[in-house]
Length: 176
Length: 176
Image (cartoon, rainbow over all chains, first blue to last red):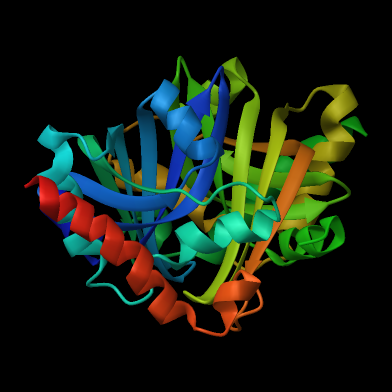
């Protein structure tokens, strides 16, 4: 997918999967998001993912639209987390995050429900953040055979994969 | 969600999002998966995620079923990646991965299409792996008010959030 097509998919997205990492351990959660001008804006209650992103702002965001196994698109973003506190220089960005997110119905739901379902009596604190997009790549699977190697296309996916997987299976079988 | 309910969701899943990390940079991709006996089995072409998981086997897997913003369930797994090579002691597990995955229609599609769409002329190599589940937690959002704090439940979600978000908005506005 072109960069433009990838950005268009991000702009349509309401839900993204955000991965962060702490001391080599990755952590991925669903987050409600909104795209604008090379940033993804989000909202969350305080918790492990926020603690981790504060300590290490490197994140990866996955947004996908999966219609069927043959018909899907996904965009992967590498970027940096920035908390939008009420510090003076961030207020306009925080307000922008709110304005963007509140145009989506029940946008606060994932950020809120998570905390309550943990069943912990912690104080509920909300925060806004944005992710600066540093690298973006998009892939698309289409329901045709165009992506198959030319020499194999006419034989159809099923037969081609039976051959590949059959060989793998046979190798395993021989060593049993 | 109970551990049992979380495992049942994993067992229904066909698609999961797997996060790995390399030198503090997380990376999350969609992967076709199949659950059995405290493991998630997967299939992939060789690429960045496999290189990273070989170097650092710590992974996080997200599986979710999202019906609507109010009606969803998600399971997060922390675990360890293990490549199922054709080494003698792994052959039975590799065969098991194949047997499990091939019961799903077009299960090989995400692993295969990704390589071709990258447009690189690299040699296509396939591999099986499994993730040992070390920690599992599940959350569910249900379309009722049961999860609201008691004192707030009767007022309804909408009014409650207008109050919280209105305050946040006002704070931002005051500092503009």
